Length: 612
Ligand code: M6R
Image 1 (cartoon, rainbow, N blue to C red):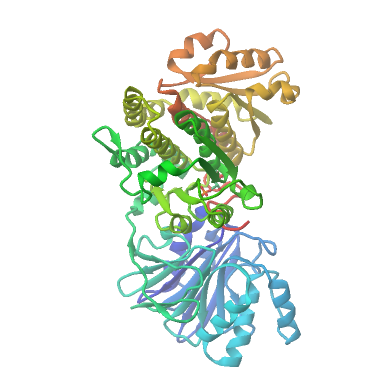
Image 2: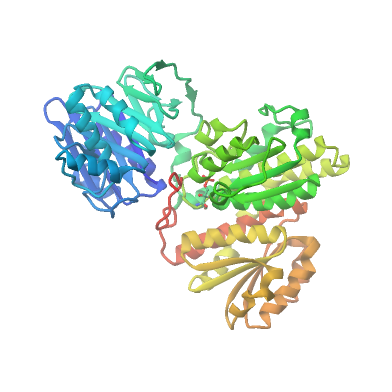
């Protein structure tokens, strides 16, 4: 999705903006642009389709643009094809106002016809240009840029994070937000805005999150924030504790591989502080034990891989709690009539904390009276702020579009929450509780064992990379695991693949299994091992080529049926998906590598999906 960065201070702005945009590249984009203001040269705008290096070449790494204040943008096209003209910043007709925008202006057609009727001519096909032109329109009438901004915000509908540069405002720029993330950064003699903290991490860790309806006037020494009514508001500052190096490749060829390797540590950081005296402690929970005991239903809502975490969670939590656990894709939940009320705890899962559908689902659940507990990686993100309770994963910044360490930490945290509730509800015998805590603590080192030797996975990937179609099959937790394994593979390697509950094969899918079809059979769920082996026999007898994943202790038994076997260390069944996902991530990585794909920035995908 689009990215925004803005800077005002004592240094040349353009190189800082380009560096910030580089940090936002991982979000996905198809063009980029910057606008810089200098007293001598006025407003200078450069934008270009394609990768950031095109813009860097055009501006000599930013050196050719004078000025100590500017705004920058990476665009992920929605309205109008990716080209130089449609790239941001967009200008008012008199070219005195430049605008960068994340989100979608829903009533842009109506506003555009209004402006055209007043004689304004448009240069681009974008919804964003309407904001720039409308600002120009009101600014010409009132002569005050802040007032013009408020008038524009009154008229536009939709979601926006805006950065606005006005040629008549020499050392301040303006920012505004509604339903799209925007942060303020307080540096030493300089200030920032950014859609994502990674864009300013090199310069400051002191940040504040803009709320819906707020407008900020950003100057080098201070940032003044006003609410929707124009009253000044005091912002709460937060210190970001992510390391700059966390957002760098650190010698790895790809962020995805680095993040796969970081999983044991990410899990340690997420789990260890929450275990004291061999017991799970959630100090951060605001809901009391009595309130938690009063819920009669859990409802998990999320998108993509976070939804797959929820799928594992549904199996595990229902088993642990003997309580109804529903799950829905956020994009479906938001337009459905879900059975949710004040007795429901809705668990919202999101790495970014900014996914628009997930946010809309959260708000719907709240309107229906439910309490919200979210599992989020980005501290202070919109979903975290709107939830009644947040459990943060401590995965650090995840840059690759394909999630790995965020998935793993979400999963382990959801399992922990399940174990915590089961104990609270009196549903767990103490010896099982003890065993589960022991296994939880052992997960990082077991994961390390998988990561120590990836040669066999690499070899199997080298034999599989040219397939047109791959099937993942599994039962119960293995089915939920297959959903993630298959998504990982398709999003980065562009190989068509599907995950099926193995028991469903006979109901249709088996017709697709022919000589040489690759089937990845997941057999880590011990209770249904024999059933899964039967499914393997079934697909093999139709000519399928099978790669199986199972626990070390079951490998021998499986070797009678399958020759290509990947193993994970044995663990308690509820944690098998946490280990099982690792070989599947690595398999997807190597298949994509062999196919020459852009692993960290797969086509058409964005890290944080802030549009519908
Ligand atoms: O930030 P979120 O967890 O809310 O994102 C949800 C999905 O967009 C995300 O998990 C997506 O499916 C990943 N690219 C998968 O690797």
